[in-house]
Amino acid sequence: MTVVDDTHARLEQAAGELSTAAVARMEEAHDWYRALSAEDRSWVGMVAHAGIAAFIAWHADPETIPPIAADVFGSAPRELTRSITLNQTLDLIRSVVDVVEQAVPRIAAPGSEHTLREAVLTYSREVAFASAHVYAQAAEIRGAWDARLESLVVDAVLRAEADEALESRVSALGWGEVHDIVVVAGAAPPGSGTEAVDALRRSAIREGVEALTAVQGRRLIAILGSVDEPLRTVGALAHLFGDGPIVVGPRVPHLFAAGRSARAALSGLGAAPAWAEAPRPCLADELLAERALAGDHRARHQLLERVHRALEARAGAEETMAAYLRTRSIEATARTLFVHPNTVRYRLAKFADDSGFDLTDARDAFCVQLASAYAALPDRR
Image 1 (tube, rainbow, N blue to C red):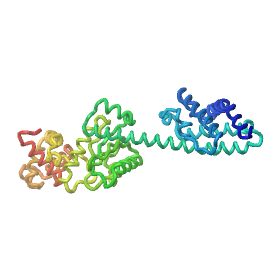
Image 2: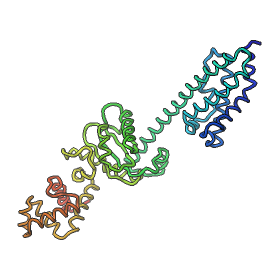
Image 3: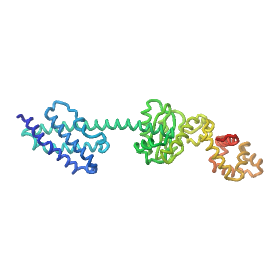
Image 4: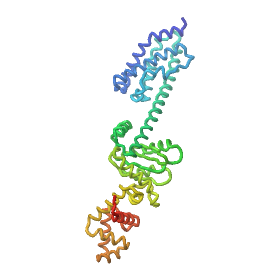
C-alpha cells in the first residue's frame, strides 16, 4: 500500500471521529451555534459531516474538481441560509479545518503530514468559495422574490386592497409594525426601473426610513414608513425621481390605511401641472384646488370642509371673506362692512388660523374663491 493510500484509509477510519470532534468544537467555541434550534444544529452537524466526507472522497483523487456546493451543502435545506449567516458558516468551516489539522499528525501516514495539511488547506479554500456562492445564490433568489412581493404590495396599496393577501405579504416583508406612512408619486427617471427602485431604497435607508418602491409605467411610487417630517425626507430623495412634480400623500398610521395617502398622491400628481409654481416636493393637501378642478370629489369635499369650518367658527367670518374676495382691499372691505380696517385684519388672520388659507395671498384666495363657487353649486359631491 502506498503512503497516499495508507493516509486515505486512515482518513476513512477517522471520519466519524472527526465529525464528532468538529460538532463539539462548534458547541464549545460559538455562542450562535448553541442558540440554534435543535433541528438547525442537526443540519449544521450534517453539513460538517458532509464536508469531511467530501474531503476524504476528494483526497482519493485530488486532480478532480468536486461539486463542493452539492456535496457539502446539498443535504441542508435552503432555509438554513436564513438561520445562519455567511460569517457563521465560515466559523463552521474554520472549526472543521482546525479539528482536521490538529488530527493530521495522528492520521497521516508517516512522512505525509505536510502533504495532508496542504490538501486540507486547499480543500477548505474551495469550501469557502462554495459557501460564498451558496449565499450569493440565496440572496439573489430572495432579492428577486422580495422585489416581486414588494411590487405586489405597492400595487395593492394603490388599489386600496387591504385584504388578507396584503396582510400576509406585509408580514413577509417585515412591515407589520411600521408606522407613520406616506405615499410619494412622481415621474420615473430615465433608464432601468430596477436601478431607480434600488437607488431610492438605498437612499431611504440612509435617511432612516423604510421604503417600498415600484415603477409603474412612467411613474415612480414610493411608500415610506417611519416618517417624521414628510417634506424634509422626500426632499432628500427628490433627485432620484424624474423631472416634474413630486407629490406626497397625507401621513397615515399604518400600511393598511395607505390607500388614502396613495389616492391623494396620485390625484395630486395628475393635477399638479395646473399649478406651475408648485413646490417640489409638494403635499397633496396643497393641491386641493387643482385636484378638485380635475374631478377629485374627495379633494373637493375636503376643500369645502376646510373653508366651511372656518366660516362657521367665528362671527363675521363669512361676510368678511366675501367682501374681501370682491375688493381685494382691507380698507375697501372695512368701508363695505362699516368696521375698522384692524377689525378686517383680525378677522382675516383668524380665518387663516382656522382654515389654513391666507386670503391676502393670491393662491390661497383662489382656493377659497373656488370653494365658494363649489358651495354655490347644487351638487356639492
